[in-house]
Amino acid sequence: MQATRRIIHIDMDCFYAAVEMREHPELAGKPIAVGGASGRGVLTTCNYPAREYGVRSAMPVFKAKQLCPHLVILPVRFDLYREASRNIRAIFNRYTELVEPLSLDEAYLDVSHHKRRGAELAEEIRAAIHAETGLTASAGIGPNKLVAKIASDWNKPNGQCVVSPSRVAAFMHDLPVRRIWGVGPKSAARLSEMGVETCGQLHAYEKAEIASEFGSFGLELHQLCRGIDERPVEANRIRKSLSNEHTFAKNIDTLEDCEAALRSQHHELLEDLRSSAADRQIAKILVKLKFSDFRRTTAESASRQPELETYLQLLREAWGRSGEPVRLLGIGVRFAETQSGPEQLELALQQPKIAQTKH
Image 1 (cartoon, rainbow, N blue to C red):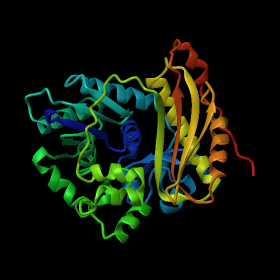
Image 2: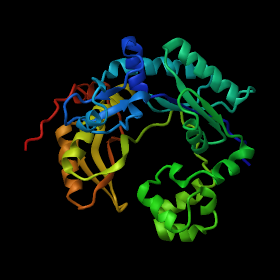
Image 3: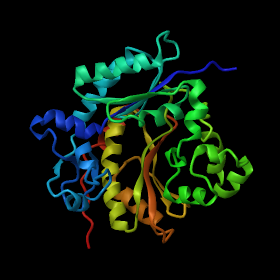
């Protein structure tokens, strides 16, 4: 039987906005967002004062301004965020070699080898992050990735939550099913029709019943609702792909809004490629959509260049396959099996020219 892991999930609090707040102390207490400056751009993130007005990430700038006319919108500065991320990861590495970054602002840490309690380590790590970077982080501590990630959102901002192995069943039992990754408004509504609002209520259904209702995701959901997750923290895994995805709080109804969201995600993807995969050769680029009826489609192109215009073409192709609104947009790259030198991506990752859609 495998020994129980101790996993810490660290999630920085409104990371990009927090870095900007640190750099602009004169904006303390004001609603701040980071993202596209034009009315057709979208926000990458926002701070907590902005969220009180209903502003959120991936929201079009014009709508954010309607909700919060005095919102301060700052341009994205990835060089600054990457520097802060490197400093934070250096702190992680003092405690464990098993660090699996998920993005610039979050990571899993396996601290199973430590004799000290996971909660004590997480508190110390968070204190070091604040002392050395001026930023705050939230943490979840649990026996697996699933539980740790859910727990890290429990006491945000600047807090932490511990779920011991003996508490996993109770923690998951009363957890709303909407807190499980992949369960959005539509699937939550379908579960509600089945009389399911919490993970515990879902336990009454057999695996075959859930699979019949939700397909392959139902098999995964059967495990997740019980807090079962056997994935290890992989510090040095060789990536076969790199992507980012965003599930929208409200489904996107127009191609134009999808294109605006894609531009923001494309910028972030290029920065991720520069920081974590500059020596990898790209074989394909792809766009993935999940529609409001939960059907998924992926459009791919054999290309070594992650160019914005190609992604927009793939988006239009994928969009045309359904008349339904979009609930999830993902873009990414698939890497070639063989690697080439870092110069291969140097040209591919030059600062992109933002394409202007004509109407």
